[in-house]
Length: 458
Image 1 (cartoon, one colour):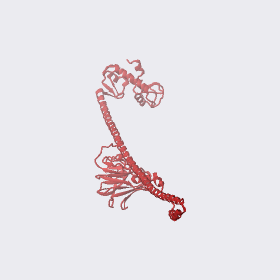
Image 2 (cartoon, rainbow, N blue to C red; image 1 turned 30 degrees about the vertical axis):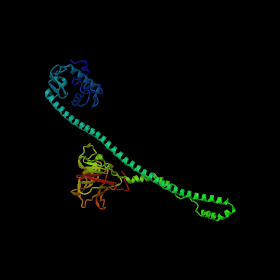
Image 3 (tube, rainbow, N blue to C red; image 1 turned 180 degrees about the horizontal axis):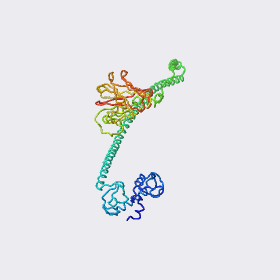
Image 4 (cartoon, rainbow, N blue to C red; image 1 turned 90 degrees about the horizontal axis):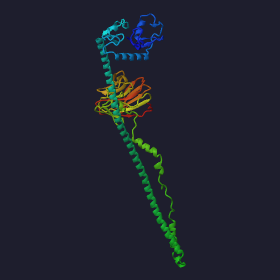
């Protein structure tokens, strides 16, 4: 006999504890499947109990469903394993409509009228197969999450390595600047001290000469004063000599200050910071095309200043989305969405290289043919353009290539950087960001530098 709580939680249609119970606007509750099945047999959707017309798709009551699940759990705990909790009969059948195990008495009851049944072992095997398929999908998804975690862990290690290497390069660069500034400081102080030494020596020599003249004048004055005090006979005997000596002293030029005797402070301090900046500017190079090491294929290694790259052994690097996985290529770090830009590439002798631009959406794990415009030499000298097409170039491959991009006009031109000879021009209405593209294989080195242009908008 059903308990009081079980009666309160029973569906009026199937007389079983609610499964996904819905509450109609008239406050009567039914299993969702039961009331939908009831309405299929009626012309009008009405409450099976009071005949009121409720909503066509009433929502499931979460609170009532939780009560029903708790009651089912309680009944299952109290029943013997393999026996029906209502009839104490062995569970031999599985109701496909209610998705639950039942006994033969349940099968013949009104609650399961016109329902479909399967032998319990057969139904269990079918559901085991469903669970196995679900488990297989879970394992595959678990593998994806494990691979993703492994990728994150590898990225974390690589970030630490990047930090160490980048910090070292930053310190090396500043050490060079510090050394340059120190050498410039020492050179300027040495020049100042040399000027001070030379001018001090000149002044000292002039002062010594003046001291000798002063001594001669003092001696002449003393002797003349002595003769003036002598008796008349003695004075008249020597006065002509005294006049001659005095006249000779008077004929000497008067001492005049020397021009340029002081230190040229303006020479040492004038525009000091600007002049130092000019010296530093001459010692460094600027390139608007800087390679992005995060895009480099594992067999390409950008150098320290990111203006060149070397082809070598495959490195163990994170397979991040930005990195080329199939094409041995690397991109410039900045993309262009406007303006006019030029850069030159030294490709040297031989083949196995490609130069041009790639769209931001270009496939970096496969072929870049549908999203790039480039020229290359690998047996034949070819021009490549979307969608993965190519044409033969009739000119001789140069050692240095100049690339000129005019984004607004939709022009991408290539020329010989040594002779200025035209190689090829692509015309296309560009709509997305374009990155300088460099690809090479079976080569040791490629070098990139920037050509000044009127516009460098990025």
